[in-house]
Length: 114
View 1 (cartoon, rainbow, N blue to C red):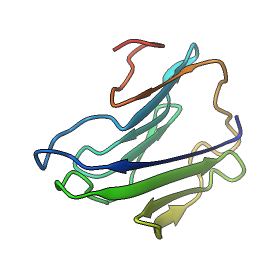
View 2 (cartoon, helix red, strand yellow):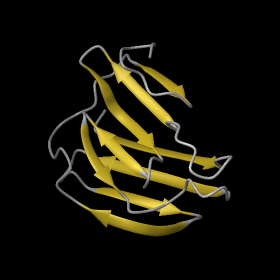
View 3 (cartoon, rainbow, N blue to C red):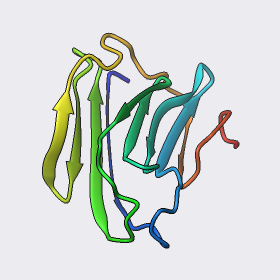
View 4 (cartoon, rainbow, N blue to C red):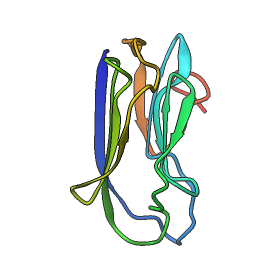
């Protein structure tokens, strides 16, 4: 895959709860594509981490999206329909390995497992 977009509604309860939102793992890497709310919404592409500086672990509903493209390593974060932060250079030229497993609500330390 040369581009990925993931969008979902999230509300942590209680505020500060930490749980992976979406995790895609393949045989080549367990963090091919991951969205994690942690202290700030985090995006991982092939294990490389990028912080959005967006707190979604606040007990409120958020509609969040993260996009990534191999072309230039372009990425963007969206919060409630508005562009929150954009940039480039994140794993530029890399591709995400197909044939993996996508999991909601749990990070995978191996394909299909924790």
